[in-house]
Length: 213
Image 1 (cartoon, rainbow, N blue to C red):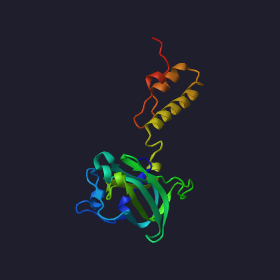
Image 2 (image 1 turned 90 degrees about the vertical axis):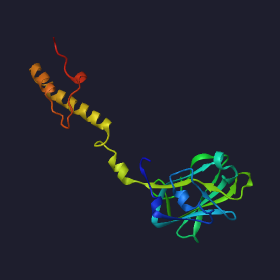
Image 3 (image 1 turned 120 degrees about the vertical axis):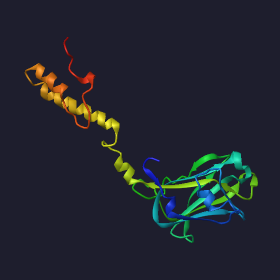
Image 4 (image 1 turned 135 degrees about the vertical axis):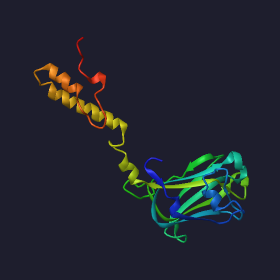
């Protein structure tokens, strides 16, 4: 995702219960056919302990009502804090027949100048209810993202093809201003024809002076 990097690898994932063969490993897999299935009383908890304080910009999780029906969550509460004993609720989601990646609302969490970053040491999601009063739940994937300053710095004139085109036109116009003051029009045409823009660029035909034939 542009401007973001996944930081799930900075966290240790635990679940309150799971059916054998459907635990954290399956939840963390990129194969959405695999899933975590709880195997205990509600609420079902997924807790992530980060190795350091992180600034979370986006949380997404994958559910599929078409596949899981009564195992699909309808109400989830999200909490965050400095430890599992010091968690504060920051979002609640209620869903009806959801299919696909769901985005957790973080806007207004308070971190960073725009107030839309969630600073966290411990993140927890609690599944309170399932469709059709189902007991256990299925969660097929979760991704946690932070701001990526490197990706933003890398987007600029050096890596943007449109910037190259603008650069090309600016330099051509500068040359025209200089050569336009020359008395000999032939010198201008010659200069335009032989302009070295560097990096393998040359003046496109539509920007050259017309030639009389």
